[in-house]
Image 1: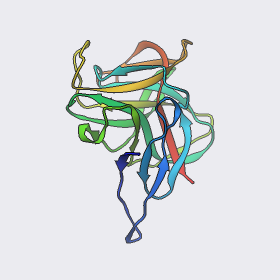
Image 2: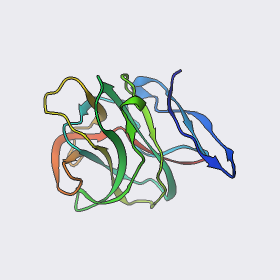
Image 3: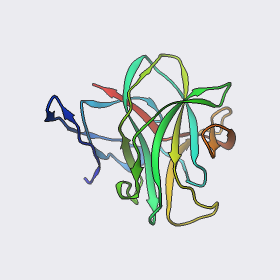
Length: 197
């Protein structure tokens, strides 16, 4: 299988890396090179994808209810591209503010056009260290530095979700990561949080 992402790290003076199987579901497994045993999926969306959207807004977010207390070490998300989109993509966590995203807690390293494939696949976003607390509601978010016009059909990034049709399972959208609006899509983003084995 094609390697989706390659992450390199020098740990104790030597390179430590490991290949794991990524998100399965609708798209089949992906092979992801990860470091430091950060391979165990903990929270996020694991259902089969039922919908998609694209980067006509800078920020997209959906709720995550943490399942237990643990140390997060990477984020992952199902993404694809059409054509050659500009800018970069990162993933983030926000607090909950009365049922919508609140304060930005942490944001991952960025991926660019050359690191995302045309076929929908799991992409690993490194560069986070965060202590998750059991039972706390947070918001998982994807951040696009560049946006395209509504109705665009090429040179865009595509995100994927699982539709529930149930309130308050709403994807919220924002242009600045501060002011949020209910996007009206009753769904969860295909976003997952990993911890070490």
